[in-house]
Image (tube, rainbow, N blue to C red):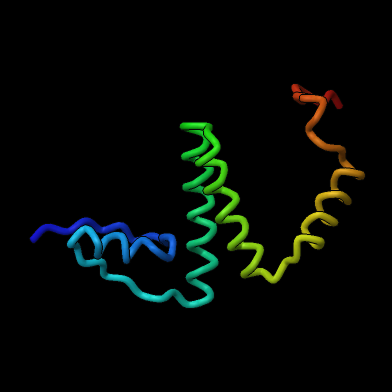
Length: 105
């Protein structure tokens, strides 16, 4: 019997999907510390997938991971919006497509 090692955080239904395919997933529940590490790794994975193939599904995957991080960190939507708005007021947004080439000193 062959096996493939993934060693990564997966969506909650993935083990059931694997079982439905007649395969046996070996899983464990992460500690809180491991979970946050894995969420960060998953975010990088999903961003890289979006960079490689910029479509709405990949964008949605990024948001799914961000929502999990937000929930784990106990950030409310209002907290996140407030932090975004404060930074936007202070530094601006990205609407003007400004690319900083050099700062002469």
